[in-house]
Amino acid sequence: MPHGSIAITIAGALACAASAAIALPAAAQQHPDAPVRDRMLVTFGADADGQEAAGETVLHGVSYRAEGATRALVVVSSELVTAAVIEGRLAQGGIAARAGEALVTPIDGNRTRRYGFDAARLAATLPPAWQAEAAAPLAALAERQRRRAFWGLVEPVGVNAAAPVAPEAEAFRRAYLTNPTVLALRREAAGDRAALARLTLARFAGALAAGEADVVADLIDPAPFTDADADPAVWRPARLAFARRLTADSALRDALAAGIAAGPDASSGEAGGAFRIGLVLRDRALFVAAVEPLT
Image (tube, rainbow, N blue to C red):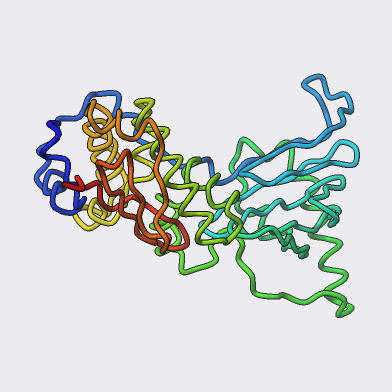
């Protein structure tokens, strides 16, 4: 992309997303910038041979420590990281959960809370591959919960950690809020908007200077692409192809190699005295919405 054509008011350059003017390599079509796995069945506190192993495990930016062999279902949504303990005991910070309890941590904050979870409902959502490991302990938990509910010892709180907003909206938001790049920045900023701006600008500059098109794509404003086609199978490859156009521009890479100085209002930055990088807030994350020459 020549130097003079870099003004991505990203919406303008993105007529390409609607018109399919970008020719996508086969690899980009088959492996777009997919988000992290949103559900994982994890065994903590044991090594590959099943022996007890000490230490912390970091998943989606949250650090967990098991007390002995522990199995949990870890779920990431657009707003929360949740570890539902099926067997054993798991701690995050100073809060511990036993079997039948979940540790719920906001992506944009550090305060973890502990809740009980509905073991019967969770068991009903298990994929077949997890049945052998998780079905029996969940059935035992469900029976115990039924007895406690009969005696009035438990009651529902109405929190859906996997979909904190309407399911359709959650699926849409998750497609751009839970990729590894954005998730890591949100966790590090911990809800501080100015810190998030600095971190986002620095990550964008470093990735573009290094030619890391997948990371650059993660940080480009998704709205112009999703407005053209809301199907992730369409807009993600288009955004990745656009990122490759940016990383191919040597003048832009050289300008960003020295980093970006954040502006005073956490909405923009300047790179090498040559480019303005504009940011936009989308559902708790900041994305690059403009890369414009200063002169």
